[in-house]
Image (tube, rainbow, N blue to C red; front, top):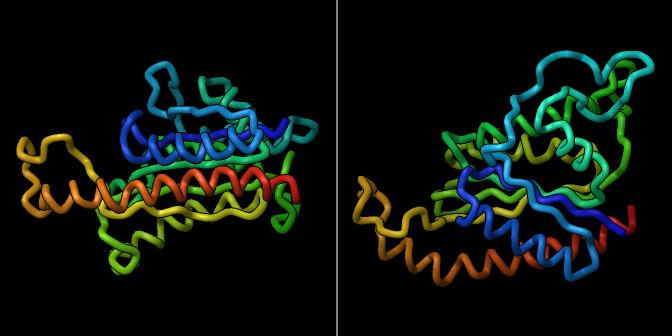
Length: 220
């Protein structure tokens, strides 16, 4: 059976990023995939980024997968073996979340081939995508703030495993009660309206993304 792994790089397990990933998961599941969601901020998932142990480069060793012995090791093995991989994160200070960046280091570096940079070590080709959520109101402002330089560069690294793409969700709703927070630049009524009108459209796009990725991975 085709395996699809969804990686939530947000510390919030029920909010925007998680909801979009869940919809993508449902799309892939209904299209016939065996699915799994991993929350990188789970308290029982203790890990760091690349530890520079170079075990993935040792001659005769296991190539293409991070083997550092911590809580992320089994997740990395499932990510490498997945046919579909979807990672999600909010924007934090112009970057993906710290935990997703650490995950990406551990995923990408073992695939880098020190003997031939043009030929990455790929145990299984896969269809992949990144889902990014943010306060930024639209793609024009996203690019004006240069978010695409760091966010999109991180996402496009997944392209070494096969075709990849990005789904953006703009102007997202952050709080249940905006009156509790110092957030004068974020009009509560506008945010609520976007959550009621635009966000459902993003959820539908995520669902369609999950279904499409599953179908397209069969063509790799």
